[in-house]
Length: 188
Image (cartoon, rainbow, N blue to C red; front, top):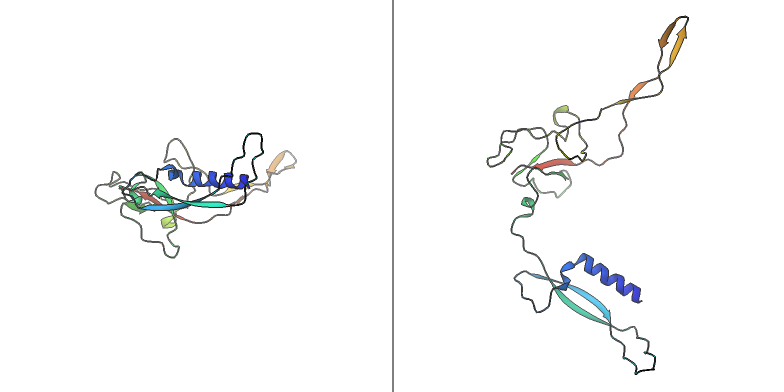
């Protein structure tokens, strides 16, 4: 029982780090509440007497948790130049926010953008170009990889003094299971 209570308290602290806010503290932020269930303290025995076992009795305590204020809209909290996966075709997805473009290789024509007049990467495969996976690096912009690669040994057949390559190589494509997203980039 104690282990369960300790794990529950640890999860609450991890998920809600603002719980340690004093109830007396005033805040302009709207409040949310978290119910913390803790066992009632058992009566303490006198010296030499064993402490009585606690009953399974619990007390609920409502602790106010302030919701932090946002000075900027959520779409502006991502750095300019960020590339983000967007579920464009999922029902209920709102339109692309102002300052964002799809990564379709188009030229940015958005006043106030540091990318004004520049071409964004074509990651989505627009205009019959290949779609791209993203790979981490200390610098950005390099491209690599191949659409196909060869499998199989190269067989050499000898005919007298001559060697004839009769290889079994053939180009193949290997694409791991995937889920398609639309890559978007913040440009302003």
